[in-house]
Length: 216
View 1 (tube, rainbow, N blue to C red):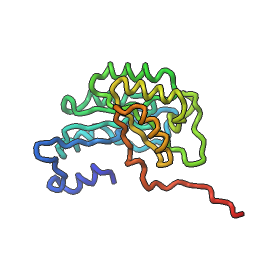
View 2 (view 1 turned 90 degrees about the vertical axis):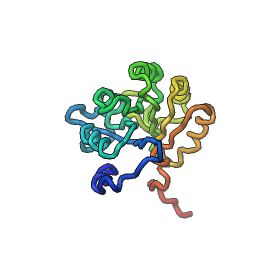
View 3 (view 1 turned 45 degrees about the horizontal axis):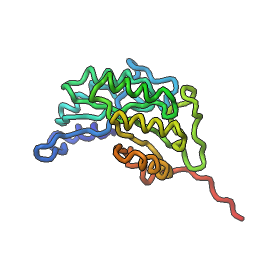
View 4 (view 1 turned 135 degrees about the horizontal axis):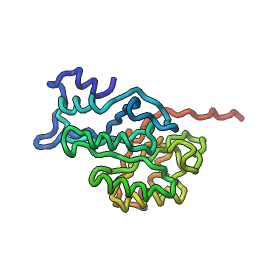
């Protein structure tokens, strides 16, 4: 059961209320509508639809003032559905969103800049994924032939992407397993004015599969 389904089932009286004088904000939501906006050929997973129309009904019921649309992996660097949500929001300024571009792609800085310019005040972060388990290699550095995931954080091109995002005033939203924290911290230390979001609480307590140690 999704959180919005739980809240809706609980009745409006059970909905959490914002602090006095403060707005109620949904800080992380994925929306999908594959029948209208098909998933990318390199989609890492293919979830069932969570369409905009249903979410807008929930927004109205819950009294949500603002929402961050976290552009999900199934769409990779195709942001058409995110742009559709911006255009179809129920109240002006309801949505802001994250973007997803290849962190080792030399075109990423330019593409982020174009997206920010096209949607002023809307794009607030670049999302980056490093979910490979300990001992597992990073994926190919060549953008376009593998999903945008598990890139080498020590690569100079990744640092250039962080700088491009920082120069645009964006945050960096990291979706990662805990063993990548040191590499993320090393990058973050070089961009101290840049907010770094630890997506999904940094996957704290995540179970990863490790090879058993051989007995001597």
